[in-house]
Length: 397
Image 1 (cartoon, helix red, strand yellow):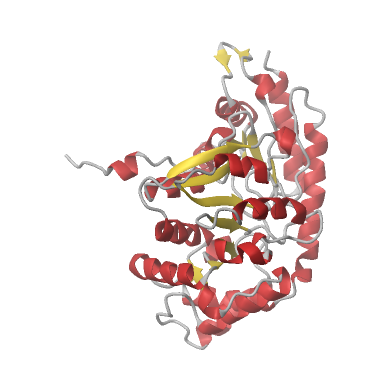
Image 2: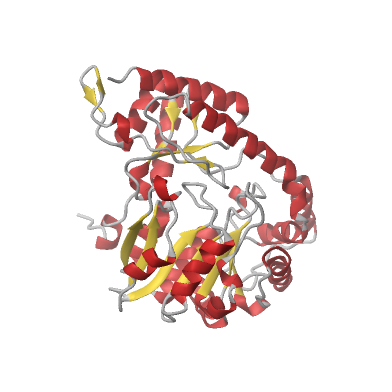
């Protein structure tokens, strides 16, 4: 009998992927399911990026590349960091990986020993906790509810730090909440981190360009903690390149070298053609994304306006990304035909089966009172989905 590893048995399946799988099964049965479960833009990769990929094929960029990425790609990322974020990362401080998820895993595996504590504000992206567990670290969760706009303060962070704390992992703009930290709020976190030089902050900024409140702010901008911060980014979200699988970090040189070593044993470099395409994305002026960002902003309003008509649903206004993360706890204990809603996962399964709308329950994000709506869909689709959700919720009593 095959015995699976304790490491695997302790790992949870990705809730977003699981819900997408369930909705695909219902679609295969002929059900008209609307899926708002995956964090994937519904736009296509811009043509100039696809052209760069075709050119790379024609120029035979089909061999192994340096593990941390082509030199000219890392140089273009260095220029992007300076242009967009005011951050100085030299080429040898940058490692390109097969998606930002691998970038995060590389950092965690490079720094975390068994028993090390990693602080993760909740709600959090589903994979943070599981990656820490694989490294045998201990996730320490700080709950930040909707009444706090899903943000933690420097004081919250200070209260969670112990002699075993090795890392903080958070995102801005945030998945699943869309929360965006201001410069003042990041400075508050920096004031705490500087007192604890053993703590490395992993700042996941993959949604930086999908920002509705102004200029994106990076944690690494504060000189006093620059050497404690790893900045994670990639091309999946703003550049609609989810399938290209390319993420990257800017980090203190020692950490970048460590990630290069880890990656060299797990996957080596990411796809050569994706790297050539990413150069075009890095060199592009982010203003070319204006129409996409305006579309997301309009969709956000549509979803928030619809949620405001649903008694029992409480939502804040997210500042970025393409998610709304409403509190649905008013429905816990309600039922229909003997079916009782005990938590947000129950509610999402009910909405999938009764309303044919796929969402993701908040348990996987560390916030069991909420659920995530991805509004990366057309306004027509979103309108239909919101109507279905409203009708299904109204049947509960």
